[in-house]
Image (cartoon, rainbow, N blue to C red):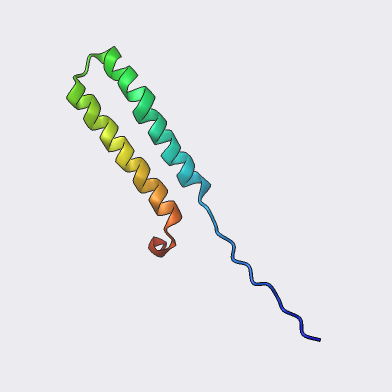
Length: 71
């Protein structure tokens, strides 16, 4: 009797990195502009802070899904 075993691959996700990325996006979209208005920061500085947080978010999430960079 021939038995074929189904080979399954388990894709691991790093929920911590996804949570960090989501938190950074929320901070850049909601918290940074609110704090900038409260503190009286200029639009260019607010934009620069938002860009920096969005880049950090993208980097956190992309490292979570790319297994080739794991040491």
